[in-house]
Length: 150
Image 1 (cartoon, rainbow, N blue to C red):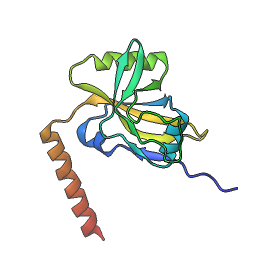
Image 2: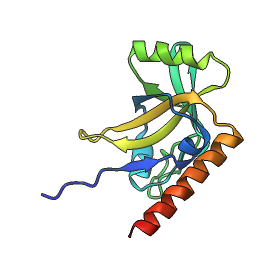
Image 3: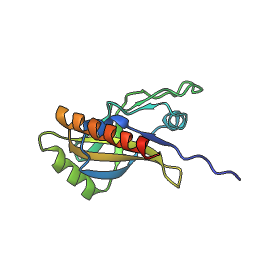
């Protein structure tokens, strides 16, 4: 029997806009049509972020398009989704988010070996414009070095 391909969706804006000081792996509560839509690759994580609310962590602005073959039981594309972490990790994230300039943001959405979807969550400060320029310069230099190597 052939293995199913594992799903992995990256948030490319995350590494450009934020420094990920710490990373957490969280479960995410999804509906059936959301799972099918994720497997089809219809996810946009560009504007997504996480907030704490009464001891729980919620993911906001994660756009999962409605499932094309779904019928009456469709989900809202931008609904808030609960993230599942243990209490100690929730407390650490809540303390970090109270600091000014610190954000919680999704880095990647992936399927684990059991077939469950997990979200890699980064917590850290946003990058300033000069930091972004510096990253672009180092990327260009590495690209040039690789080009002249072979």
